[in-house]
Image 1 (cartoon, rainbow, N blue to C red):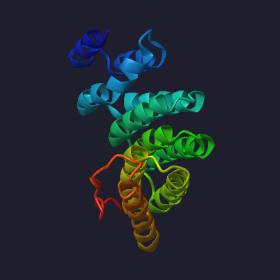
Image 2: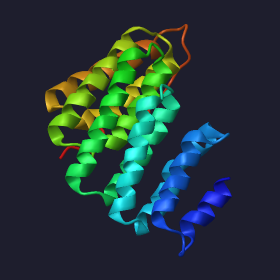
Image 3: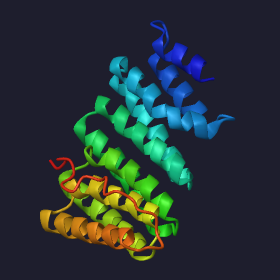
Length: 217
């Protein structure tokens, strides 16, 4: 199936709008949905280079519609990453509007879940979208997400789980206000240090960026 999608996307004669339908429909409703969804961002990354704006807009709408219907963290993350890829072909306002809807969906899913791994997965999707949002919207949704990550860190002493949550805090921190970013980074570092010093826990290296990447606009 993936080979067929790749051939379709690379065919010069293949209609762009039909390609959008094939890629997204198969990813959302295929028999191997999870595997195809995970590959969707890469497929769209190659296709978007020659994609006209109108099919790209339709593709973006299909992705946001799919996110509204999904409640699986992995699916939401893959769809959000795919949306971030394809919206590079849209006008800034169109991209910000659709990515804003997707970011709100991820934020709501993070607020609802009690699974720390799902929080990490959803945070990855939000990080992919943040650069396509208006600055104020990026600050708002990323602050909400980091607050939720901090709550998850406070609820566990499991070192590997804390490490994943801390990495997500660092990933989203560039989109926070500077004071909030510093506060959350320090709290995450302190939680990791406590876990590393706990003899009942496995040692986990502090392998996440203290300063984070520069992402704010």
